[in-house]
Amino acid sequence: MIRLLRPFGRTVTYTRLLHLFIAIVWPSLWLFLEEAWWTWAAAAVVLLPVGLVPAMRTVEGLQARLLLTGQRHDSDSAGIVVAPSASWSDRGRLVVWLQARLLIGCATSVFTANLLMAAVDLVAAAFGGDTASGEPFLLEGHSRWHVLLLPLVSVTLAATVVGSGRLITALARRLLGPSPAERLAAMEERTEQLLERTRIARELHDSIGHALTVAVVQAGAARAAGDPAFTERALDAIEETGRAALEDLERVLGVLRESGRPVGGRPALTDADRLLESARASGAQVDAAMTGPLDTVPGPVSREGYRILQEALTNVLRHAGAVPVRVRIAVDDGSLGLEVRNPLTGAPPGPGRGSGLRGIRERAALLGGRAHTGPDRGDWRVRVELPLR
Image 1 (cartoon, rainbow, N blue to C red):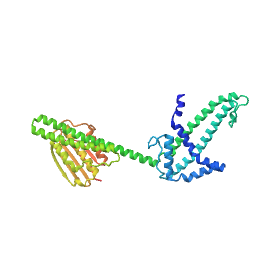
Image 2: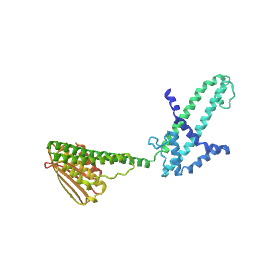
Image 3: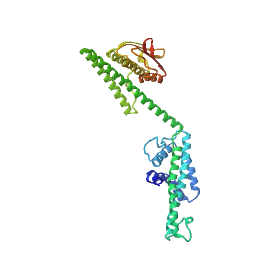
Image 4: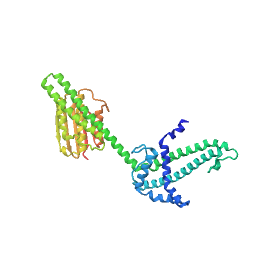
């Protein structure tokens, strides 16, 4: 019983009824002036060209979203768009919506008004008063029993109010909802947002993971060396790496706080010397060679190449320690080649293990490139090829 009465405690139940009444205000005024049956047919004809106006979709969408769903702001849960009509399909659905709103509004208004008058007549007849209408409900000779029909009329009236509101809301979501093209655009936008969040998470993993790895390796080496000069250099390296990680963190958090802000200031392969110096300061013997015009590499490729190199060096320091590292970066024939090789100091990781290796492969795949990671003649080798287009 409580569940049946719950809709009448919600404001949206009555705003939906108001939405239907608003639809017949101007035809009712016209009917009052003309007093002709064809007034309603003329009103339906007038709505045909009105529905072809693109801005009417915005007007109807705002009104339906506020009165039928109770949501003032844009929300996916409302299922009603407020953008102007962009195609003939949108215009056609709007015309159908205007006709349906007029028809349902007219039927609901007439039915509700007659039920209210019938309820008044039943009460009046039960107490011997005059009745204005509602004769079908009256029983001759049993005026006191008329009041027993009042619950039936009340239930019918309540069902009309709730049912018509739910019907017009369902039609609004169907006819004023997003078109297939708009759904596709929203899906593409959502996909872009998810990809951006995934990229940010990957960048945080690479940047913060690299900084922590360098700090741990440097601290351990300084403690084992017991040399004040070496300890000073280690602290300098930890400070520099930490500052770079903090800059990356602040930039990423800025992007998260301001979704419309363009991504900029990300390090690229032209900044690779910073990574190489950081690895050398951690004790690794880095032999690096760069060939080709790195400054001509497209931004996305250069930035992802930097992160791949960063992750590869981090893996070396984390798993192999201070070992000789061979780095080769080459730009030629429309592609970027990047190779990092170091001696194996233990058992190689199994296939698919390690989030760093997965990140390298994912970055390469997103740019249409290839990544090969694994043992090669006693070394651990990371080889990545990225197309420049």
